[in-house]
Image (cartoon, rainbow, N blue to C red):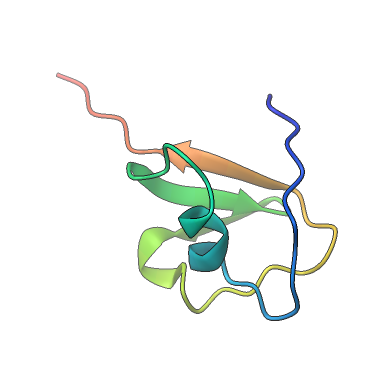
Length: 62
């Protein structure tokens, strides 16, 4: 797991965080403090300070 620290600001949303990160165009969901947040909710979901976040990319199989 990549333990990158990002600069947090009051009111930061998941969408805000992903805009500042690289290679997140296929991020379908994130795990925010053990809670799954799907992409339709990225803008409305605020990130509390000192959160633990894991990006979950879209994966297709066949």
